[in-house]
Length: 143
Image (cartoon, rainbow, N blue to C red; front, side, top):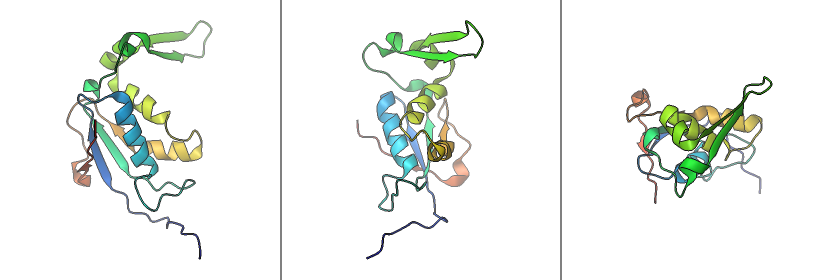
């Protein structure tokens, strides 16, 4: 018996996830699962077997508990004294796409494979997106 290896010319589907009223972590875990390809029987840990994911209504995602005020988005400019700190309430007002991208990026491998996988994630603030030609299928979230 030989080990099955997926072919490089893999057919990729497009899925759309509506984040309106959904918890940030639940949306991010499902998106990471689809991006990696763990929903497919041909999943291989060291290959990119995943599909494309479109997340719409990023501004309507919610966080539970007191995370809106207490969870912090921290970045550094690279200059002395350049630490920038912002809570998630402010981040979701200014750039809700970044909050979802950060959550998903933290759930995929932090290596070459992860950098290849994250390129298949498309996040949009509102309900409209420019990927109608790919005919994305709706992905149900059980919450």
